[in-house]
Length: 440
Image (cartoon, rainbow, N blue to C red; front, side, top):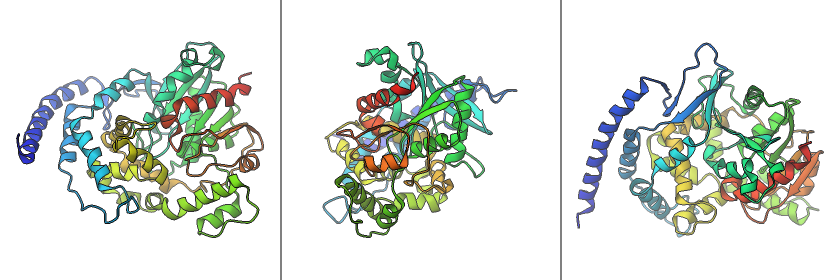
């Protein structure tokens, strides 16, 4: 058996040879189409930047070889000094992730899966916006624009596309069909990276309305969680007559007195119901133990150079963004998959790495000036799915106060922050049920 040192030398030598050979082929192909820095291939905008242009992902082997080289070359810190994860993502978990990522993970599988879907790019407000657009074969399908969050991407929503567009193949009815549009947020994935300030959730919401109208939809609904919720709720506030309702799995419903008390670690107010008390405790825990990543990105996103330089550093940062999600993902790499697989997790992290969007995506936190959990005064129809392991499970009483036109509320038995990713069948059923009254 060769030594670990010799094995590493052999691996790096093979990677270097592969990088040189395939890099030349990629350079030749690039001459016939516009290639974005994030390896997306599409036609130039030409005279009409508002045109809808087909998009295809084409990552050169040299980029994947460089990724593997960097993973193998990781300089590891010492093990944490506690027996649990109270100091952060544990060394054993991260080493397991890195070993699988460098030696077994295959990006080409998800690249092929994405390229099998209709993908496009169009310029809105001076920025190229990438999106997936799958039309249902069923007549009268309801268009839904689904927005991801951070550290998510279009990868999050892949599992719900076919159940929504092809319901009869997934236990649904033809009349429950959707056309599905999934854009990449600005600065995320294959969308353009803003070079000036101002791309906050309000501006993104305006761009999404332009996108849906540009696609020819006179009536549509919207869905989102995390930043996807912030954008979706802002869409509801724009007053666009084409938007007839929204669904959120991380709604902004927290009463002002609850927010102020939980944020400073104060005692729970008197008179809370059991559901309200649980939500208060979840919020208090998040503000105390789970907010550090958001505070850094809200204040100093440009400082995160390490995330653009180290794939393992990027993965650890993304894994640790909130406690419940970290626990779920850590179990995946400890051999206890539940809802997600190792490939699910690394598909998403690798997308961030290849597109070099660690810092550009973090700037959305800096741009945002909205109170994330505070009710916004939405009056159009709203549907809420309150998953138990979300940052907080919104009580029905708070949802009714925040959304006077609440048309659906449910508390699924299982699931957390990445609902479409973790529990696609549950979220699919929630969307079918929630939007059924709006299909007139």
